[in-house]
Structures are given as structure tokens and as C-alpha cells.
Length: 181
Image (cartoon, rainbow, N blue to C red; front, side, top):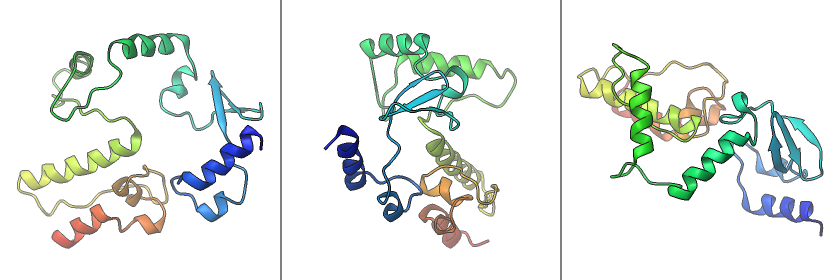
């Protein structure tokens, strides 16, 4: 069995892709991306693709940008990860201070870090909901979103406009039961 076939078999057996019908996914060979350079992605068969998805920072700097790779290597040699659950670290503190300083006179006084768009949306939903509850406006329990759009693949983010099956997610179902609108 070739490496691409072995990986495809393992992907079909062990990976659950977001917003994907597994039966359809498993009927075809998956696109297996093995490297990226600039705006291009290369698959396991050596075919190049333009990264139209532009994941994370690649929409600005491209894949494998030497300055970003070097910065990541320097940081990983010092500290590659530290949870924010009951701890912090100097780089996070310094970056938050710099970000808040970009908005002088604005009500922004703190930064919430998230590692992807889905959890950023999820966190924003929860923070917004909590804010209105804490200041005494429980009637403010609805969210505005684009219909049939991708806002993320966490439960709350998906419920905003994704497939209909997610529009009654656990988070929003609890909100609607506790605070009927």
C-alpha cells in the first residue's frame, strides 16, 4: 500500500471532519496537503494549489514565511505552550498591552486570546450573553448573523448561520429555554 493510500485509509477510519458527511467523504480519496510555500499548498501527489482558504496568518504572509518560522522556533525553544487557566506568560502580557494601546480612549481594556475563529466566535457569544445578564438585561438574548454562512464549527458559532441541524445547538437551546424570546 502506498503512503497516500495508507493515509487516506487512516483518515477515513480515524478522522471526523467538520461539516462533512462521513459516508460521502469516505467514498473518495481525500486531498492530503503535505506542505505549503507562499500562497501555494502541495498535496501528497506533488500537485500545487492556490490556498484560497487562506488559513490563519497565511492570507497575509503566506505559508512557511522564513521570519515567522524563525520566530516560532525561537519561541518554542523557550516556551511552546502555557495554559491560561490560572497562569499567564510574559509574551501574552506584552502583546495584550500593545493591543490595548492601539485603541486609546476606547472602552477596550483587556484582550481575550483565542487560537482560532470558531472559538473566538464561541467566546464572543458567551461573553456577550454573560455581559447582558450581569448588568441586568436578561431580555438581550438574541444574536444577529448572516444566514447560511460559516461562522465556525463550535456549537454556538455553527448555530449562527450554518447548516440547519446546528441552528438549535445546545448553547442557544439552553438560552431559549431559560430566557424565552
